[in-house]
Length: 95
Image (cartoon, rainbow, N blue to C red; front, side, top):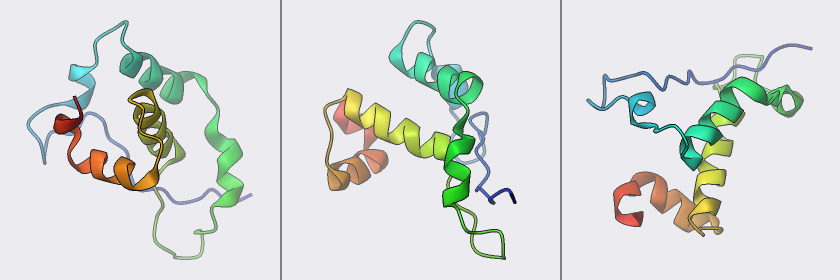
């Protein structure tokens, strides 16, 4: 099986925003636990066969990124796709 191409995920980046995402995660919080589970414990390769972008198509978002968005939105009571999309762009106003 060929590996799908994913858009790079870098939680340590500070080029677009001066705040490092990983530095903001506090141990013992839901966000910290979710980040740890998705990056260190869960095998997300079960999703890979669904990606058909090995032949030069555009890279996809990694399943861990998409799961983070969905799980975080659900934890805040947001379960409909349009409000989830809106919240990804306006995260501060959801607090």
